[in-house]
Image (tube, rainbow, N blue to C red; front, side):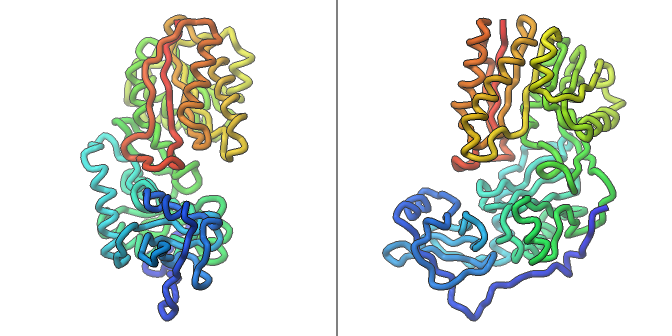
Length: 416
């Protein structure tokens, strides 16, 4: 069971009000970037500041003519020293300001989902004007994930506006790995802590396109589920009828459930994690009254790379490759591009004539062109004619408004 602390007792670190505002001067290049709407100011871009800044206080950037340029959350412990909240014209950042910004984010999602989908993203970080923070909904549970400690002094205000506008049953706090230890020491908050509302005793069940899924919002990857692949899962459902489907890196079986409901002849999941495969079984069980149980289903616990290389006799009509990020750092980019191509080449050997391959990447350090070209090149080297059916990017509830936010891409190919 996750720990719960009543929101009324949240520890709120307030910046000193008696000191002068934190004033920053940045390089000419950083000024230009801010004028273009870039949401980050890096430590090396700061030429001077009038004093040391506290975690989470507002830092104000002035241009070379001493005019207000931008304001944001200051984080002295992060290479991203300032995460920008506003540009061009200063505003009073108070509870009403946060409420207005929340309503703007919620308004962008208005009409995207009906009652058959109760799991989606409410706030997508910088792209929604909440830099370093995401907010996902799983039915009546909200998961607030933060990537900088600069949000901790503002946590009580954020919770109050969420409670006012969304009325969740509970809010779970998730912390990026790089800040979890310091957050525990300095702010007395834990990853997976229920910071508002009722305690939680297990996975949360939510709906996606009428299918039931569980989300481990306390300890699961990301915020508990991969909500960003919803549209690709729906497309797989449309393509699956009568096909033998292989879902590599299957995790909790999201693509598999959609394929089964779409009329797949059989579905095979491959994942190296016992925990992931068990979660997939539970998700199938959650939908036992649905036609998904008419589909033959098997699980294979194995490393997907190795299995694809070692079991070439197995053939399929539809294959999904959705590996975890293969480039978490820029210096891993070249190796990841090679790995994506190798993975696609291995998968193609398992495809029957007219078979369809969906290849996905969630590596932000690998560009769209680099990933798509790696998969296309693997198809060309196979000496099989192929047709590119479509490519997809971020779903509408996961907008990416600047380059560093662009991570998700997928390509569909039909092989002769």
